[in-house]
Length: 427
RNA sequence: GGAGAAGUAUCGAAGUGGUCAUAACGGGGCGCACUCGAAAUGCGUUUGUCGGGUAACCGGCACGAGGGUUCGAAUCCCUCCUUCUCCGCCA
Image (tube, rainbow, N blue to C red):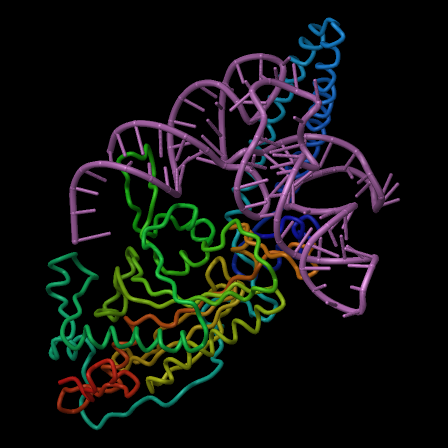
């Protein structure tokens, strides 16, 4: 949610910022309605004040034994007028809210305009591994080593699902353990949230109403229409709601959390042949980091999160790069985003394993999450930030492809071995 | 799943149709006084939001949420949500 006062103050500036993100808006209708709304408020509040004054006199007049029936009949008319105006007002309110709720966040000043093609590489770690033998695709490797069972995954749930088996299961769990260990060492609080969330959670995150059909909705036969819950597409959706409708204190900020959850995504129509395997599934494991900070500290917090996510990939020894996204490539709620992309040899490309973003106060406004300044008086919206740390489903292909050996085995990154019984390779 | 009880500020809690919504009373926090300091004590101060106004200030709204009855609702009625207790079921 954008600050309505900024739109009132300088609609052109706001329009320009949104345009940078590829969102064309015209505020003139909105501002006209806004004025209309305020006029209505003045009108209806005047009537209410009158009604309150009259009502306050009733007990006294009654006590004095005076006839109050004329006041009653007059007030009946006033009440009816109030009702009519209130109805008009709430209609405008709803309309305005809907308009505002549909607007994306504005990009940060240092985020450049344009789409993907304008993404900038910030840093590169390592080099593309070179192989002296014919390399294999990760699907071939994990199937051959019995790590992933795609056939039976499809048997259970259809296309886009798989089953981890044997060393595949262990490697998956070792990755999660490795991530968790790092986050705990960095002082992040571990959260295990519900996986089914209520509608409001999606709204706060900025995913609803626009993208409500892109999540798995859980139909409840008792609900007359729509859905009551949905499967979370990322733990961010849960973590951003932890402090919804709360007033925090400046002294206790920042809150640093991480959560492990599977992520459930429809990914409707997004299948591409080059993404076969684990690159894009309907369910994948991810650990998500999340921070609530003051506005002053959110820039630094974003750098911290990017640093942490990159350090995890670095710790695995995987060649990867960090990119800063151009405005149109940032998701709707975010003002600034970095992606960490790992090298997948078979795709001859880098794939996102983490997306680290600063939402500024956009989500905080939607979820009404504020903090009291240390002066004890002023309230301000918190800033919220999230970053994957990390999604396993693209790390595992990177590991098996970057660490594949000529004999078909795969070396296990050293940091993971303690969770795999000291094993050095999968064969 | 069945039965019952409850939701009022930072916490406990009073209020059961108007003169009781910043909201009694109590606790906590903060400030001041007393003190070498602390405790104790005393005094004061502590919701948010939306409008109007350059401002001082003025007004509206909010008693879990949403409707209804009424001139008037924290209070009466309906629907929903949450919490607690008991029973049933269950990993």
